[in-house]
Image (cartoon, rainbow, N blue to C red; front, top):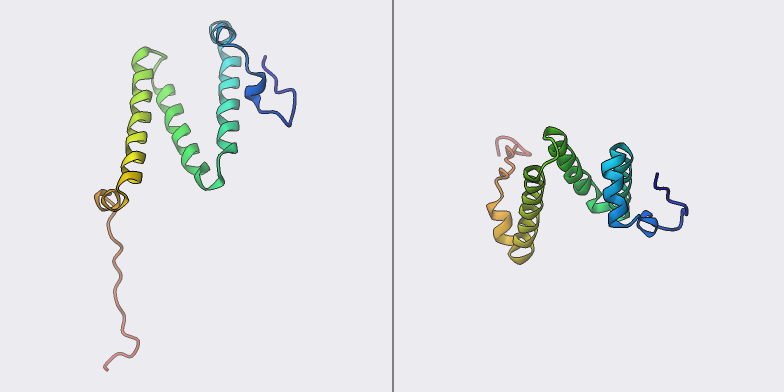
Length: 120
């Protein structure tokens, strides 16, 4: 099994080659899944704290999509489409933030105005 031998190094510094990962996925899928989870979590934890919640949510969505369906090309395509949509949304938000916010289906907050001095 893959081990991160140094606490000062990222797991990717010791990452097996692509061929070794393919072999691991085919012969020891549980260990491959452990490695995949470890690397994903490590990457999320290296991200700025302000976006970690969003990344964890995205990873959760991907994991649920993977659990819902058996591994297949179709499943990979669904996840790829999710990532493409997320990138498109980011591009839209960066290129025209005012329009992006206007197009969001977030209801504007409403508040009742209570007079400070009733009857005046």
